[in-house]
Length: 177
Image: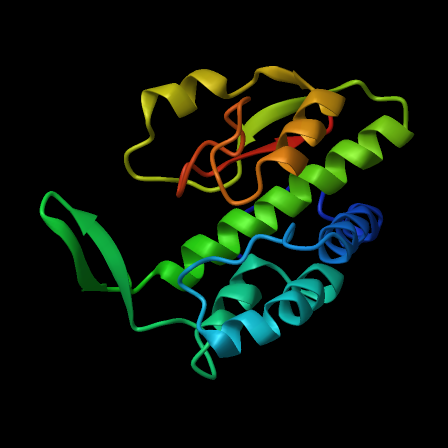
């Protein structure tokens, strides 16, 4: 597993699935990366649910790499317009890790609130070779579960106001106190 999610158990997975189903039920709410091909768009919600039901972010990354689910190239903005560039070789891992972690955090927030726990604790779920100082500063911080849940629901696939998760490859997540 790419991420060591401390509270990833059957109960948290149930809440994660509820969050995914909620996004699927709302038009255009489930984040669809521009790096997903048409095959990827067609398969994404199904493999995301399978990953949450009985696998992990590493399994999701492997699935994203199969059956042409990712585009080979993408458009990038340059100073003079746009250019076509190769999609990074780890795009599948970045997408899988980021979205699996987002749904894990959302599910854990819902679980905490149902259990009467108001705050979660930030920790490093993935070791990184060069941790960002702003990420390091968040480790051990307590964060309001309702505020975090609201923030993640409002900001799919982009940086959140509360800064969790803390950008691609930050390795940060949350756990029960």
